[in-house]
Image (cartoon, rainbow, N blue to C red; front, side):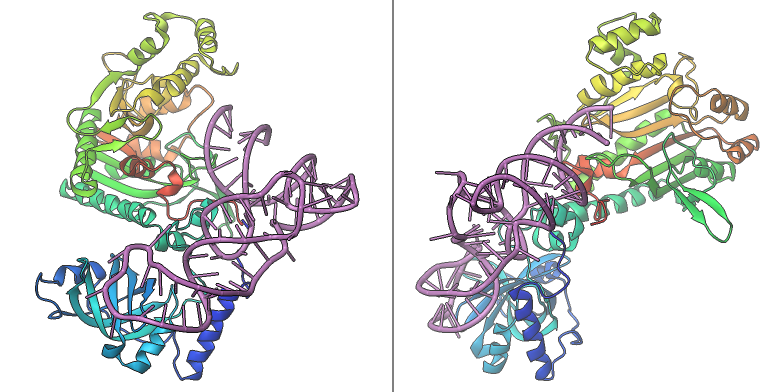
Length: 488
RNA sequence: GGGUCGAUAGCUCAAUGGUAGAGCAGCGUCCUUUUAAGUCGUUGGUUCAGGGUUCGAGUCCCUGUCGACCCA
């Protein structure tokens, strides 16, 4: 797109500036008017009693988004936080002078209006305006009313316009706030305590990801922006906070795509005396309560597959190794050599990096051939032990971990572990990490573990991805108010 | 990082290499229950930027900027 105009660049802007000057010439400062609404639009609409027109008086305020001028009367609509409400103005009610002033208003202006509620012929509850005031002038026009704003760049860069003219965007982004709020209440009811831990860290641990680096001038030190909150929250388990969570912004210095924003929001929850199983119950209850209380539906469309995701009832549980055996059609997959795995992966059309270790080849098959097919909610259990150094080893199969990955719509929504609390084993797991992706070792975290950490279940939930799932959005950018773009 | 596609009026979109248009918005008119209100008239363009080809470029070529999608 072209640059956002800063100067007077078109006639509509010039016309509005002229109107502003005219207002000021008559002693009105359209940016200093005071007005106190009594109700939001949604509240006002509920006050009308059927069959009793013009008995309830309200004062509402909002942005003028529709004008239907009918000569000596007008129907207009204003938009506030709760949505639109229609206003009806008559020349014989407000008076000649005020009516002329009203006609000079522009779409986009903020308006305060006081009047009584009635129902129109076609059944719309409307405010019959007695008094109004221009509370803030808009100097630039709104996007087109029917198509709204479709230019994706402008939608993201000028989100305020998107919110004004695209009701579906507005609903989707506001739903996110309700999701987060609901999660807080859900966890608080279960006696979890919300904390805030540092974004700036000396060691970026808790995950394998490239961090952003920044510099602290006074301390003369580089810091990393956190890539997970895990190691801080586990220190709090050590410190005696048995049920703890953080809904925190995480930063990863990696690609930007439909599924990735460099900063995103993750819920991490840790519960002492619980485990991976406990986390399974919790995530299922959490998501199902969101369906019940926030979105109002247990089924969501999945754009990629055309399927409908059903979040109700019990969710499938399946072991990682079984999924791999199924995908490769090889019941003895895990007793074969790296060379055989590489050949098989190649045959499946996958690119195999020669540097990869054996488990990384298998995991590529999982990522490319298995995960995308897991549309309905699926707990993938017993991941190979190389994949995460922070989880407990499974007792039934010591080559695997006591963990799950909840996958819905072909995307990982929440990984969870029975947390490793053996400090010696933890150190060993860190030091013997395999493969390309290695976590940094946080020595103070190991020291904390040596003081003793209760057994615990822990889980990370990608809030952005959860919102994509719940809203049927096609991109992470559609659930983030201001997604990252190249500076324009 | 690589590939494909895109950028034209405030917005949404047209325009065989040959005079840049429409709808909405704006401006002016008519209309006192409209629902994308309707009616009559009308203003508005550095076609993303910079080069090139051509008698002639919104259109073809090159470079760049920004975006979308796919791949790594």
